Image (cartoon, rainbow, N blue to C red; front, top):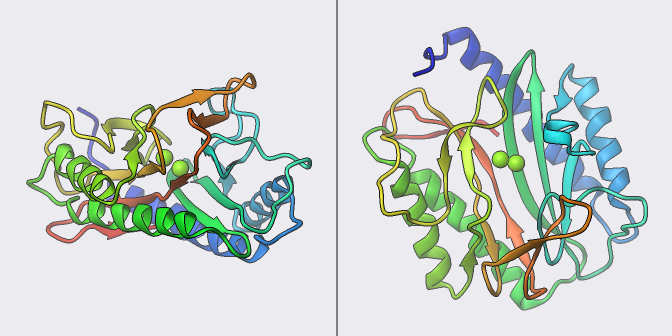
Amino acid sequence: MKTPLSKEEFALIRKAGSILRDCMEELSKEIREGVNTKTLEQKADEFMASRNAKAAFKGYKGFPASICASRNNVVVHGIPSEKEVLRDGDIISIDVGAEYEGYFADSAKTFVVGKVSKEAERLISVTQEALARGIEMAKSGNHVKDISRAIQSFVESNGFNVVRTFVGHGIGRKIHEAPEVPNFCQPHKGRLLEDGAVLAIEPMVNAGTSDVRILDDGWTAVTEDGRLSAHFEHTVIINGRKPEIIT
Ligand code: MG
Ligand code: MG
């Protein structure tokens, strides 16, 4: 068992979370037709530096960029590139981790570029609502599986599928910690949720099959059937009956 987080450590995690929330807000203003995803990465780096923080993904397990920019059929871990220019009708998932004085928060959001299809709109709203329903279950006395079940059942009742290859996670002193927080039910209940636990809850939802495959760059995860994927994530602190969303 790890040592419980101190008051000071919680303050630093909350600070990382608030910087990240502001960073996502800044990035949302940049998302439009004609912008390339490398520019979004540069904006994120500049913003983090301006707040004495840094983007946590760069170099993590060898990931080559500061943010993940995952467009249309890309599920996660899209690598920003000058060659990837946003077009009217795209959806783009931006995933960012923030490190502040050695403490971490993690967040993701799928944005629309211009006018998108009805299916894209519905996929995004279902994924966002799935996250909200997962977060509602993040309270002491519940188990990880209660979060997983809430997400999976909402997604599937809307005719979409949760990704199984990637999962949510504990966070705080490191960007990824135990426990895993899957977006699908496993036979066991998973860890009992206790006050003070910090979780990154992050449904990734595919319009079609839940299967993904990794491109030759070793990172970019795309839907096996080429259909759209959306991703929303917040970092939450479990705090009695009401989870505290810090991102
Ligand atoms: Mg995460
Ligand atoms: Mg993330």
